[in-house]
Image 1 (spheres, one colour):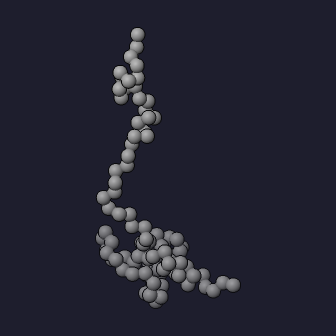
Image 2 (cartoon, helix red, strand yellow):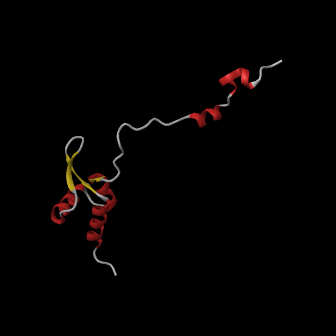
Length: 92
C-alpha cells in the first residue's frame, strides 16, 4: 500500500528532525567583546561623548583605536568600572 520510512529516505523526515542536523557555520572573524567603544561607554555612563573624552584625557583611562571612520576611545571592562567609580565618587 504505502512505502516505509526507509524507502522514502529524506522525504519521510519531519521538518523538526532537520533542525537537529543543522550545524552553524564557523565564524571567520573572532568576536571582540573585550573592548567597549566610546559610544556604548557614553550611553552606559549617561554622558555625552565629548564629556567622556574630556574625562578620559584627564584620568588617562581608555585608549585610542582606529574605528571604521575615525579614531575613537575604547575601554576594557576594568577601565569602564574605574570610570564609573571615578564619576560616582567614594562610597561607604
